[in-house]
Length: 112
Length: 115
Image 1 (cartoon, each protein chain N blue to C red):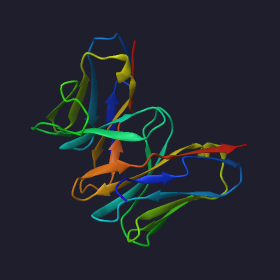
Image 2 (image 1 turned 180 degrees about the vertical axis):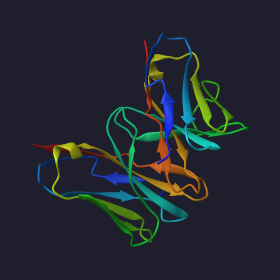
Image 3 (image 1 turned 90 degrees about the horizontal axis):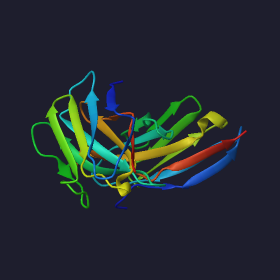
Image 4 (image 1 turned 135 degrees about the horizontal axis):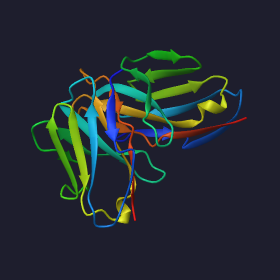
């Protein structure tokens, strides 16, 4: 995988449902995997920075896992709320390039 | 976390004019800053890497004469869109890596509309 890819591109869920989405990234020369929550016309808000294979991080109802060997990360949201509606971006940080490469994002809409 | 301030947040300009966008690191020194652009219905695309005291590094397909980048100090990088055209209308955002490159801190973004 040469690029950072996210799926699905968009997602609609009902309030209270749990959901998850995927980020795939190049496993070679991996340094860190970032998850951001991004609302339109605002700065992306950092959710997690993950570096270790098998790492699992949690922030409230949101959690993420990381598999650096196969190059994927999952983001989970438990009991979705309307305020969770946003675009969730993942980005791979390459140690050699010192720059973030972003996926296209998953646009989540939580319906009340 | 560290703060990156980007200004202006929104600008409307006439076709053919130039627009300068500033990105400041407020509580840390940033020898490197990244400039991104968001195309409609797409994610953030890296335009260039701004390096303090040296020339910026542009990504393939980005015109360096059109998007002038200056990184004059350890806390300020600027992006100037020269001779702006309507197709330059977009959301531009800067970021600076933390010490150790473990995460990125973003400015608030600039919505540019060229009429």
